[in-house]
Length: 128
Image (cartoon, rainbow, N blue to C red; front, side):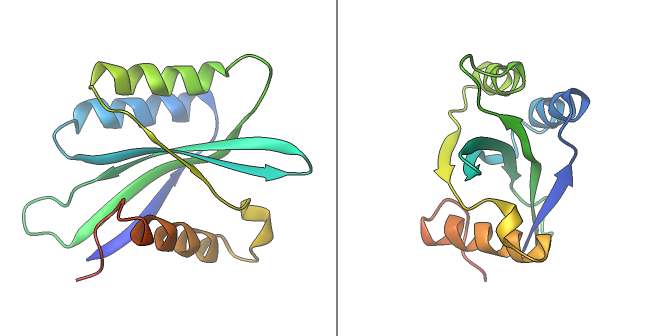
């Protein structure tokens, strides 16, 4: 099974797009994630949804808005919007602490790192 991240942007429009993807594909959602990382003592959040493969397709997409949400004293409107969309669908996102993407030379290595963490914790299916 091919497990691949599909990166959306980090703006409001991208967050709304991710939320709409979740609503339209509510029967396909395997899991939703809120990833948190730290860089220069600032906490960043990434949000993602993993979708089950379609029919016999061997493709397991994980849509992500990477590190576009910065922690502030009040919860970000972007994070709130994502949580509200998931609450409509009765889905509780899993929170995972990870390293910041700036540590990696290539974004593909970063995504391989996250896929490894998700597989080790049985949050996504193993390779077949």
